[in-house]
Amino acid sequence: MRVGNRMKENTSTRFINFIKNNLVLMAIVVLVVVTAIVQPKFLSAANLTNVMRQLWPLPFIALGMTFVIIGGFIDLSVVGMISLSGVVTVALIDPLGQVGAILCGILLGAMMGYLNGTILTACGAMIQAEVLFITFGMSSIYTAIALLLTNAETLRIARCIKPYTIFTALGSGTVGIVPIVLIVFAVILTIMHLFYKKTLAGRNISLMGGNKEAAFLTGCNVKRSMRLVYTISGIMSAMGAISLVSRVTTATATSGTGYETNAILCVVVGGTTLKGGKGSVLRTMLGVALVVLLGNCMNMLGLSTYMQTVMRGAVLVIAIWLDNRKEL
Image (tube, rainbow, N blue to C red; front, side):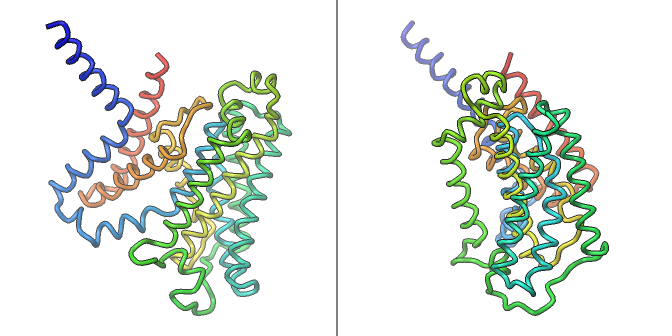
């Protein structure tokens, strides 16, 4: 009897632990099943294609935000970086060509991210409250520059680019049934996962996020790691912007609006703690899947924009509450 009871207890314990460790995955399954029952069109080929379109550029932005949050910081400047990178990329397609414009857009993102990190270290901003306001200010600067460059108008690709050229292929091209942007992102995600898990620089990011003073005492260059995470965020924001404008073939000075909160939501829902020091780039992608599917499900069910905002806010609050419960 005792052996049987122990086996039952072990089984139930393992089941409970599995649920706790895979809450996001379980939430995705429940969301898909319930929505498919209520709205059968949810699983149609047309809607699934629409979900794939809605996915971008959020995965890129959330990936960059993951490194910033693991490092113990936050980055609200992604709004301005997305907008300015997108505007500059579209503006440079005619004079520099497609490849040149894309490379310049990514380089600009890296420069903006590095500038953010440099300003933060120069200001001695080492807590999230200080970082939040400074990055918000930087976002306003980048957005203002984008407004000046566009004269507050929508930029469009001037000449007619063939459907399967390099630029538009990034946004809408496929290899078989697999979107090219998904292949590009899968490669980048693999590289960044290995960078975080296998390199000293990646481990230093976790050390910095866990305890900055302890990280400094162990030989970690905290300022360099800080500049690194913001540079990564800048590069990913630029790549996200390029994935967006290559699909819609237009760019505005407000293209990045709202992506900062969605990116933070994806990271926190994916299990990365806002306290820093712990997280997973792969689990962030589960967070992205949940957020995008949630948005699509709410659209399919006819919920208003305001109610959708309420729902996203509620998910973020619950995710933070669950994160804090882990520490108890």
